[in-house]
Amino acid sequence: MGNTNSFVRHLQDVFSVWMGRSSEAGDVAGSAAEDAASSSSPQLPAYLAQLSAYVTQPNLVGEVGSESVEQQIEQSKSHWSQLTEFDSDFSDENVKADNMKVFLALQSHPRWGMFFQTFGYDTKVFWSSGRLTIGHKFAEGGQAELFSTKVYWSKSEDNERDRQYGREWVLKVFKKGTRLRHLQCQWPCGMLKFKEEEMANWKSSTPKRYPRFFCSVDCGTLLKGGRFAFLMKKEHLDLRRLIDDKMKLISTTNSGPFSKCDAEELMFDVALGMSWLHNRDIVHRDLKASNVLVKVHVHSGFQCFVADYECSIGVVGTGLFRAPEILEACRDDSVSKRPELFTMASDAYSYGMTCYEILTGKLPFDGHLGNDYVDVVISGKRPEVPKYVEEWVHKLLSDCWQHDPAKRPSFGEIVNLIYSNSFRIGRSIKSRFYRVEKMDWIKLEGL
Image (cartoon, rainbow, N blue to C red):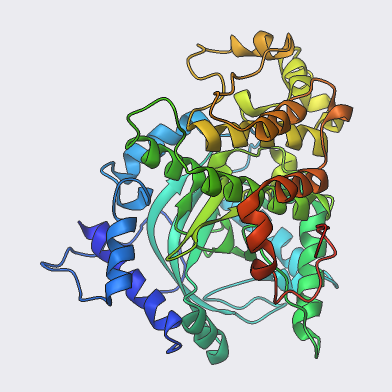
């Protein structure tokens, strides 16, 4: 019940924003205890209480499910990405010293050095940006652990902005022993280039507003214990967890976890996020539902944000989501020598598999044991699409799953295809973007 009551308190904060009222970081090994459960839930306005009841059901927020955090992490291991391996014969103290050396060099970069900030201590380059209180760990992946985090910014206006917009924060802390000099080799150049553009936009006298369909990484930081972390805005849960929770309520095989309209909007949001990445020359390399974050809106359903792209160059993908050309290289043990295989076209293949998750609730090739699916995929077989999936969606998946990468659609084409065929998205797209001043990374007919 502790998680449930914490979420209710979160909803109260969200409500205050809607109504317009709107310990320093150290070693992450010790996380804060969870809030104690109260004997009764706070009184909420009617529609917010309805949302509270909705989101605390097992069909929505994995954070309040019956499984413990440890159980959720254990279950997630089957979806962990395969990572590039680096040799490391450094002791913990040497890693800490080396990480500080590299971090200071990053802070000193003339264009995007401001992206790298510290909390709780100054460096010879920049003053501290504030302090952090690191809470409980709620998720883990092959590279890093995720912690709920409270940020106390040095500038009062930043704290006020967090309060006004109901922002919460997550710290993605890379595992003990991770060397920053290795980690920075995994960052796509487009990510830092975008941060440079974003900072210039903020400083402009007429800043532009853009829609967001990607997980926003606010800054990189080096904790006092020597571990590197990314500070990111928190969303409610990941798409795979949402799918799993929704599937628990389904008693028929004649439908997927979402309504037709919700499924189309989820697919559309993911395509928009991938279009944004590709327009900045960022290849994701590991697209899947568990790498998509979801925000819950009281009246308008779900909104997706593509995540886990910030260290994409070091990722070799996740088995059953990999394109056949990558699976062939993995089978031949040559994938590390062929980085050219990871392309926008291989992302399109993974997108098709992610859409399959959204439409069916299942993992692709679920039931295949070990790596026996590899030869199946290479030989041309693809997951069976249920009959309840519309013909145009079925064709979209088939196009994404083409064996020849050159025949797969771009995400610009995917976005326009969904927009042209989905009645709900065709009606709502203008209202979703009516405040956007410029959308040079997405082209939609009729806008």
